[in-house]
Length: 240
Image (cartoon, rainbow, N blue to C red; front, side, top):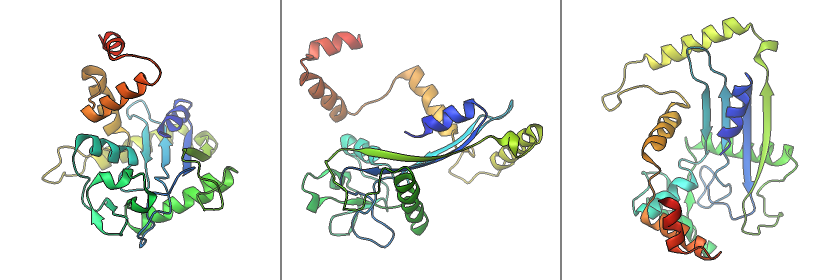
């Protein structure tokens, strides 16, 4: 999660932009117009410090329509992904997340980029900046794929005090966020949220009520613990 780096930057009053690519295993995100993977979920983060009246604004997102982790959660819950999220290995539309977790790479489906060519373009720049400018390399097939996950990141950090007056910046942040959130909502929305607000609400709810886990996810944790000699009874005692 690269939002952590954005949070560290805004805590110091800095603006940050982060481009990340993912290498080491098979690509699982199709480029716009493609019917097979050429990227992984290549996330981007942009973070802006808050003010006395406005919380920090942190955009932390995959360039695929859904993150692979959300596909795994859907698979564990036995539910479908949203329409237009993925394709099968034959390039056909599907909502079944099981296509994303096939051991046979010939049967592996692909997630689709968000925003069609726009998300695909940003995913490519994650390769160009995150992969090349970090020195870590891109996902192109000349590099080995040892079935592990490697992340490379290119960061841009800006001290806004060298560019604009801090009081004016704070006023503009407050004013634009207030203006955006003051928009009339559509019939299915209670409130206009800006980047960072959904995550803060989820964090609050999780701290108060715990983190829900699908049975399949919990079974995987118990099985992993068993491989290093931790019994189910010991896990139960830890939780209690």
